[in-house]
Length: 417
Image 1 (cartoon, rainbow, N blue to C red):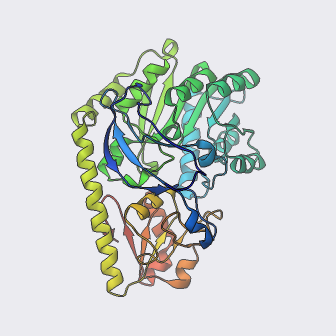
Image 2: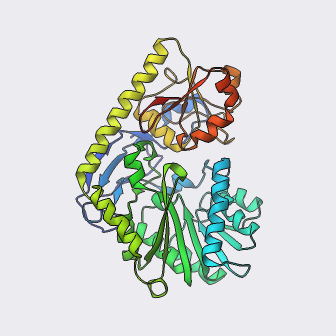
Image 3: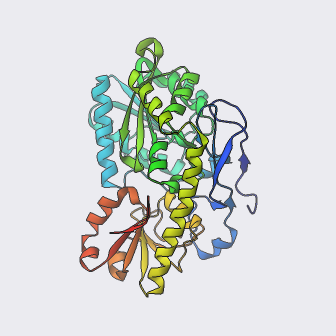
């Protein structure tokens, strides 16, 4: 780690049970911040990198990284927006329809989204006549949401903010949170805040990447400093119990490489954890997710993936083939840096997010171009860094394929398609 610009600290206790003795099973080495895209080559020399390790708590089964970066640095000025992908837009529409139908929401009801980003999901609720309020810490992204007509509170969410919002806006029939639960250092405070916002008969609906998919599909690139926790059903049960919530229902979603959509509510209204949820936790124990050896095997698989991917790229470069990449997602930066992939192996990447175009990927320093640059240059191979959107990307790049271009999907095992 160089410099003092980005405050860093290392946890020694578990975020759910509070106990020490976390078992580190994977080290991804020093990593730059996944969304800190340099604007110019002059910034390369001043980039900071920080340890990125992953540990397992044998008491509550939470998988977590002890390496914590100040959220003011990570999230106040953010360059991820949730509305750029067509498949994600469809997902938000389905999500809103699901919550509205499940709870029978109407014009009198309020839905609050924590970490509401550019308001893409909340606009789907508004389109169906339901009141919506976002809570978003990134000042620039909150401004985008407001410009789109989504009422947004520009603050980091915690129990105190939740109490103030409830006093000012009233209780919420649904509190939704997507791809944020894994980002918070104080897991139980976050859940307590959601509970405080909630009307008696309402539900907290949270989507978070599923640990089981991460392990099964070798999705190690989804590990980066913004993601502090990797949730199993078992760990979610422990967290909800500690926060005084019942897990009513869990649905598996394909989004982001495999996610859990959890539904939690007041025990007095919804009763205890549902039998279906308890059965999922039992299945995880049978699959080894509650013991350290499963994670040690995963770490060995991560090393094997790196060796296979770099060997494939090196063979292509030696044979005179040109390789580019598609996407500049945060997870792509973990993969690029862990595997040591720079412009000598992959010449550039392309992305649809205008806030990333014209910059360079952190650490690996691939230039980020507009998507149309692919056809202008026509590289022989394209490494899909946004592999969770691979079908959408390959369909959109039909002309590139018709010209003889081929794609590389890096996980779970590198393959050329």
